[in-house]
Structure formats: structure tokens, C-alpha cells
Amino acid sequence: MDFDIIQVNQKHKEVLENLMQFYIYDFSEFLQFDVEEDGQYSPYPLEEYFQEGNQRFAYIIKKEEKYVGFVLVHFIDSAELRYYSIAEFFILKKYRREGIGRSAAAHIFNIHKGLWQVHQIESNRPAQIFWNSVINEYTKGQFEERIENGKRIQTFTS
Image 1: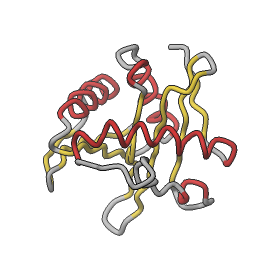
Image 2: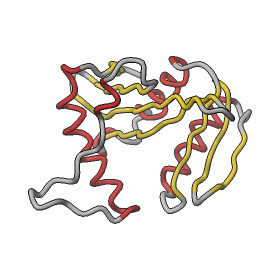
Image 3: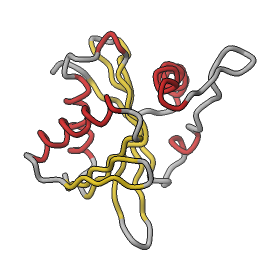
């Protein structure tokens, strides 16, 4: 697969903010988001991704020098469990079904080795199908899945 995953820095912050508008638009189908008075969706809280040491990682995906999506990753470090989680994952519609999302997810899992929990809201059936397929392929079926608090959650180790 011919694409690049670039860890976001201040140089890419505006690009990520702009791509986030398309993501929120797509996601509004499931959570009924509306645009604000200025015609844009309320900004996603990205500041934590630009602070060192906070265990949040943002990546932009490019194909042939064109922006095609992004991935936001959290490292959760609680008293009960330490694991990585996909906070947000987005591929522009034009580039879907090319395998970019599948390959990008595997690349992110390989960058952040350890325990993972990936969740999808109950109403987002396309995301459930995507993540179940990606994680099944990545782990060769070695993952657990459960439904909890209106979310489908897959747990595995990369």
C-alpha cells in the first residue's frame, strides 16, 4: 500500500482541524451533530495532542502527497488497566475501499505495541464491521469482543 503516516506536529495542526470537520460531518449521521452559527461543527478538542507527555498521538495519512485521513490514539493508564485506544479514525470517502484504512490501522497497531481496546458506538454498524474485520485479520482471530455501555469493544495485543 502506497501511503504515508505522519505524526502530527504544529505544522499539520490546521490540516488536522480541517479534516476533523469532514469526520464530524460523516459522524453526524450517528450522533446527530449540527453545525454552529458560523456553518462549521464545533471544534474537536485537539490541544491535548500537541502537549508533550500526555499520551495522545495524532497521525495524518497521505497518499501521493494528498491528505486522505487521520488517526488519533490515546494511551489509557488507569489503576485497573493500561492500553491503547483509537480515539478517532477517518479516511476521506474518495479513498475508502482501497485498503488504506486497513493498512493504516495495522501500521498504528505496530507503532504502539501493547494491549489495545478499540470501540465503536452501537449505532455505527459500518465502523463495527470495519474494525471487526481489521482486528480479526491483524490478530489472526486472537481478540476478544464485548458490548458494554452501548459500545462494541475489541481487546487484543499488538
